[in-house]
Amino acid sequence: DVTYPDEIPGYIKLRRQTYGVAQVLILERSEENND
Image (cartoon, rainbow, N blue to C red):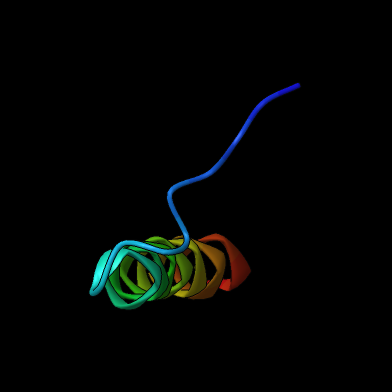
């Protein structure tokens, strides 16, 4: 079984920030592709 350190303070926040940055990059690439 794989355990994720969700109990560590700030881990979820850090993961959300990382995912947020990835989303922004994906959106930027999508806009460029639409051009």
